[in-house]
Image (cartoon, rainbow over all chains, first blue to last red; front, side, top):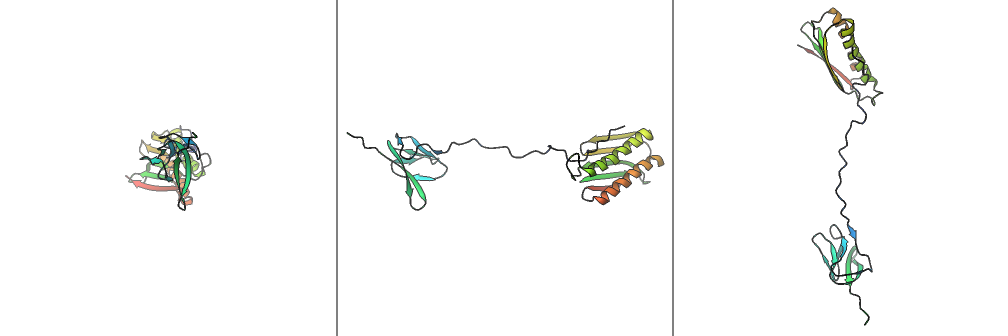
Length: 96
Length: 106
């Protein structure tokens, strides 16, 4: 004698599985030094993907498009042409 | 879709049946088509075993049922199985997208 299972041929709730649920680690991109901030030579100003900011004066760009200062001075975010932006570092005159 | 396969011998007697799939008519607990198929196919097993004391082998799991008559079919076992088949055919007619029944001779 079997017990009648009325929902033997019904879709069971919650048996579906999702194919999502994966993500890469955060890459901590973004600006590390802000406009007017004093930075030392070699310090990173911006971590970015591609050239959201272009190279201005006294800065260098790494292979991963990281922009860093090549001299000690103040950071300046400037416009480049109509719709681009660049970053420069200007040495600060030390009062004698 | 629930797929039902009726196994018949050369004399047209039902010797077994297999039921696979899900009706997908409504969520679990509210699927009236699933419960109709479940009831018809399970009551037939109980009728054969409890009322006619026939030997029946069956395999039942979620969305799957396979039943086989272990003894030579006779008029009494056919009364139960043919009644079940009539009910299943009626369901398949009313809900062609949810229930499909096919006959196989062996």
